[in-house]
Image (tube, rainbow, N blue to C red):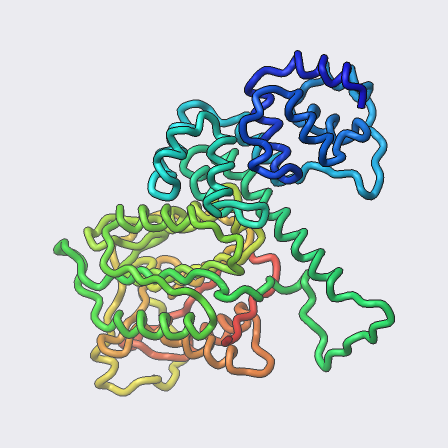
Length: 456
């Protein structure tokens, strides 16, 4: 390229723009070769050494990323894309998006970001970092971030700015797409014979993907002991916790158990979990075992937590990496103070001794309904305004039947989708007679595909 033209461009670039150019060129020029460069002329020499300035394509992309339309006019590429060849180097989306985050990061958020990275980056390196680009470069050197892993950046940005976190999430999605495409390309060979499977793979339009290990996170909130005077201890709930924990571990989920949480602690834990990076998860499962009333469950301090407070933090606008993935909630709690009655007598499922050990997970009757959001399943132990039952030594009727039916399906050569499983749960629970009363679970869902859970 014309050295006079490069000299004129150099005169128009300030020190912060030269620093940005150095960062953008890290994928093409050795990091050590970029150290100490104070003006654009020195940078252009490094680029010429790498053969990156044989035409104006690469420099045009750099200036376009910096939004320097005036300098693009000097190159004659403001209103048209320069011609490219198959070997033309291009800036990665990863690095351009990092630059965009740098542009939009306020001084206050930059200070918060360096604080959050304390302990993960050496203090001296943090103190020497004057901009977010410096911090990004240090994160790369410390192997905290790369073009295939921006998890740590996403976690930090979630604490600062949801819009910037979304940009990081987009980078992660691009990485997944590129990995998927390269995986397909690597598996295609000339003259290769097609592989014929004895069984056709599930239709991706009909089934949610379940191929990560672990499959995702299963959270169990188990409230047994209450510190007020209105709600009795929930004897037998430890059996529900045990059954759920064993089941979802076999289904490939990472299981976390929280015992005896107050209302505020439930909200806080749910909020903390919603900040997780779910990119490498296929699904989320949340099981809440407590007393309840219509539209809510109780903390151990007898404070209400509405069901919408459990689900809302995981909607796609709040937990972007869960978008399009199934979010399964199972609620063992009464939803009112009424009993369900059966019009036709049915033989009891348990003997007299077991019947005397049944209790209700009930509270007063007030509350709210649950809003609908895409890809949610809410498995309720009972219909609205009614009680659910729990055996004081064997666990709740609903959770125990749910675990039995999910196990039966997962062990099958042709496992059922979860709505079919829940239909069987309804049928089996509905057949029972509990203290001469009935119980009917109620699944609510906005799933857009089928969920199939298998043991791994």
